[in-house]
Length: 255
Length: 295
Ligand SMILES: Nc1ncnc2c1ncn2[C@@H]1O[C@H](COP(=O)(O)OP(=O)(O)O)[C@@H](O)[C@H]1O
Ligand SMILES: [Mg+2]
Image (tube, rainbow over all chains, first blue to last red; front, top):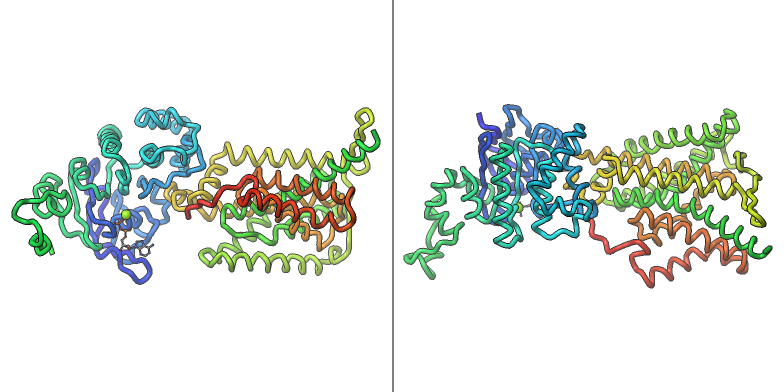
């Protein structure tokens, strides 16, 4: 049984249907990625999972329990934690206060203190700046803080919304390395949404391709990396035969 | 020595009135930070608190300290009810509508108080353990009345400081006012934060009422003092808790000095003159920065 099982969800912004019947699974302990261009609906899917938005139709099961429509705090309590797009740290709180907020629903003081140490171990920069205001951190440091904050709730499933957004390639590498390490050490399952397809496909085991609110392709990341359309449209690999005007005429096979 | 003493007295009474402006301004700031609503009924919360304290002392013959404690509890409950009954059903409505609702509450509280038997439209007062007591230090004479206001305000502010800095709920309230969406992702209940915000504001109002009553008496229109706390809050930047207190003190002292040494009339405009001067130099107030709130 998968840890997270989504079936045919439809999510609306007012009258606009942003997610048009999406189904996906996240197996326990795995890293799954959703690729998609800007506006495809990636963020909306994550928001629907974490309960910030409610799906109009469809079902979301976590640990075998149906969670669609539950309030966000119930979902955090069940073990899903969200690293939002654009980091969204509490800018005027200190690094430590931000991390403590990640553990808002927990009451085990001693263990929280232990987890703080674990976070400073994963992210030594944060350990050096515990008393600094989060707003004064660099983009990469804020991303680390957002991830650390989400981990402080001890999630079974971590939702990551474009963790590489706006970071330099080196920082991106660093963040992805840490994500991988956390996945293998803490056994935290991950659902990562990315525009940077190469990174995501290297990191994850299974991938979904989202276009205009629909899943158009699903496969193991290994297979996806070999897929011609993925290569062309997501990895930016250009082949000799399809250049210039001809390229624009080519159709993606999945349409 | 006489003149010095007189000036000192004037400043001290300015500081004590300033403390009360500060407490009301703090109420404004608390609610504004959390919900972006300016609560025009903050002064009336103070008025209700004063009437409750007056009743506990005069009709139930409770001691000052018991009254202080009980009034705080009653006001906390009152704040909770206001949030639950009046404001929560309006979540998602435009801010403007919410502000209009607070103006409605202001009028409503006044009318209700004027209709309650033994409250009504008369002026009342009550004694405190500090009434008519003086502190002498060499030739300097200070009234306990003023000193007690300053000390109690300091204690209340210290309690608030500890709450917001060191308790999980306090930090969560600050977090929510900075980034509501992120707070929701942490599992923080925004409703609970708003409720607590009103509880604290009502307590601040009640406290201000108890402290103010011995110097200005209890009356249904005493909430008008909220209009003077407004410039105090703006002076502090409307976003800053220390700013509200400092703003209150500045206005209290200026007013007191203007009342003593300038022609009649200056006292009432002093607050606004200071406000305009400060805003010309620092448009976001003494402690304010450009707004950068994320909702
Ligand atoms: N607050 C909103 N109101 C209306 N439409 C929105 C809102 N947020 C996103 N959308 C629309 O929903 C679609 C999916 O958005 P989103 O999930 O943010 O995409 P992605 O994260 O893949 O870039 C887009 O077409 C976007 O324009
Ligand atoms: Mg997005």
